[in-house]
Length: 483
Ligand SMILES: Cc1ncc(COP(=O)(O)O)c(C=O)c1O
Image (cartoon, rainbow, N blue to C red; front, side, top):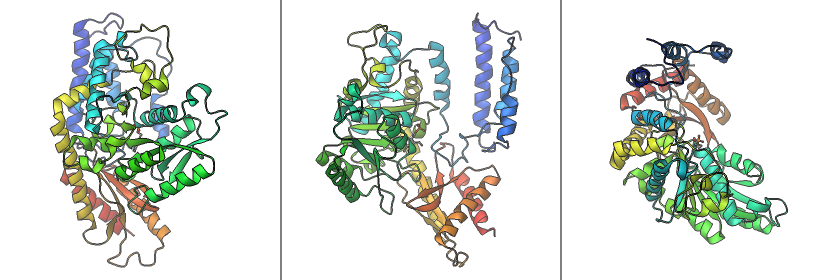
């Protein structure tokens, strides 16, 4: 095999490279079930393996692919494994993986319709699909983002621009009243980060609202905080509800929060980064009742819609709200009347064609296919909790609203934990997780929710079957039984 001249692509060479890559991807998906989830490596070894000077001369692509297989694959964390019960990182759909290559080949710039006519239309279509799933009106709109974090920051920026319009030109300096917003104590860290990025103050601009025993926002406490803050001369402008708390998948009382936002004149943003996936299902959709009343919504197709990274989305009920927050009038980009200019709806200028993979995947799977998968994953999670807790030594810390379980070992039946304090029992959860991880075969994590240490198990791979969870239950029980 000769090395293709890098700047003179010839179809046969591209095909040979593509075939080799597609062949590896196919074999990889086939092997996922047996690969250890966690690589056996250290930072020193990994960085050492890839510390190298700028190559002076090019090399054969076959050698580069060999290096990928030899060094990159074994030192990768296999998130797409069916035994990865982890942090909302899905097994990507093969069609979406390969769509990335097609999008890269077209290399459209989705910042301007002129540079991506079909791409812009496809992004508009997938945004429309997401708006429809949310129950939004035809006047709603949005854009794809790099993920839930940027979607949250974008949504909050739009909220600020809508409720404190002078902030877009004058900034926050000299405002008569300091803008503050509300999210529960269980909100994802990107909410606090957004408060920091937007100059609101991660510490003081974001007001953290207590939660009830199920980890849902305490609505009465929210009402009290808004009233107190107004009495102190602050300017409450937004409340954030969560559909799918990161620690436990629980959904805030979205309808009640919509009522509070409406009666208090606040913008209502729902962070449905994860649980938006449930909107595909007629059976699960009622769990998110009230989301249609949000002014803006974060959704992350790279979570429950099985997209490879990056693929997030932010939607606004008022389809012009994004443009009001972001338009600057860039003079050097061709402007087309009657077209959509996605750069005006968000923070990014040059934008990737992420819509292609989502468009292709939703066409391939269909709403009903996604619905079946989401329902299956929720059912697996419910069955896991029922099986693990049935003998009384384990408890569910929070309810199962989606496909995340937060469980805790209590050891009550045999009196093993009688003399342990709550703090001791918290440490036990961490120890159990550490022991389960030792095998590198499964991946689970520990978290703190409703003030307790809990073990977090999420069904996020479409390859996960009951047998994988049964194996995990055995591993959890064994880890808990060790002295
Ligand atoms: C509720 C919630 N919102 C936002 C995010 C951030 O998403 P991303 O990692 O895509 O930025 C996450 C990530 O897990 C999340 O759980």
